[in-house]
Length: 313
Image (cartoon, rainbow, N blue to C red; front, side, top):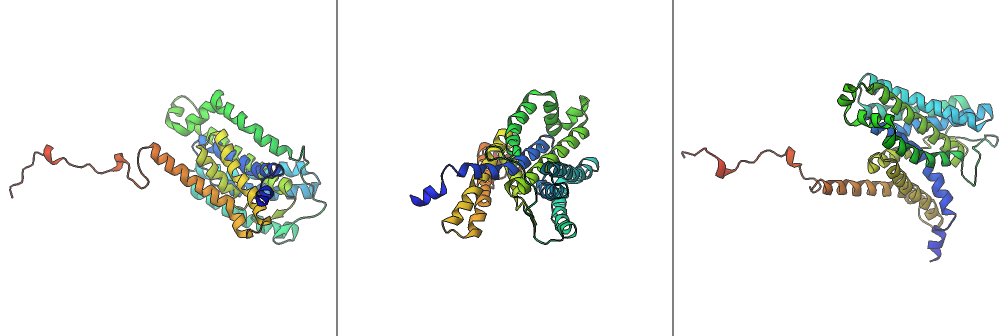
């Protein structure tokens, strides 16, 4: 009972909210891309570049909000590369996204050494972090506000209808005069902006520092959240909340003697389990068992009774 009270109490809620914000912001960006028919796996790289730009902007200007602006611009810049490569030139968005993730890891490590003269981690007592309201940064409240706003936008606004039409039936959208390229560009750039905000929250809100690869897979968790929720905003919120709760509990499990490696892996294991469960449920809805070949893909089976061919042997 004592262990349970150490793990779960009211102070767990702020920890969950802090862990939730960066994943939720990135996942909402991924959901917008998915609605436009772009599978964006570059969320991790966008977020990491945003986290570095936020610290750099805050350090050189002394203002955390300038750091947030720098993060937004950096995330949008990375997203523009994805948009140009995949939307304009028709490159595979998965390959381009993975390449951008690798670029972000190498680029931020290089800039950490050249700009700050540090390796591993940069932090200074004078580095300005984001202000808090009731224990949470304004970006946390913005992330929660964006969920219903995006839901209403997709269901009620004509631009939201067109965005989903671009993703679901691009040829039909073009026949109605919708510029599908413009909408896809806008969706990818919006995801870059949101991932930039996620990176700023991570490096100036949750902590006040930059560390190499500090996103630690959160962008990939955001991709999983989009898949689990099928890009529905409120579903994305629930999926991100699942990860955030697991991450907050993982930190507390270290305090009761669980090895740090196992505790750190807890949220990712839980996310993987959720993805497997969702996949199994989806297959059951389609009426087939896991691993079963869909009926439309099966080779036709001849009915011997209906065959008109008679063997002479």
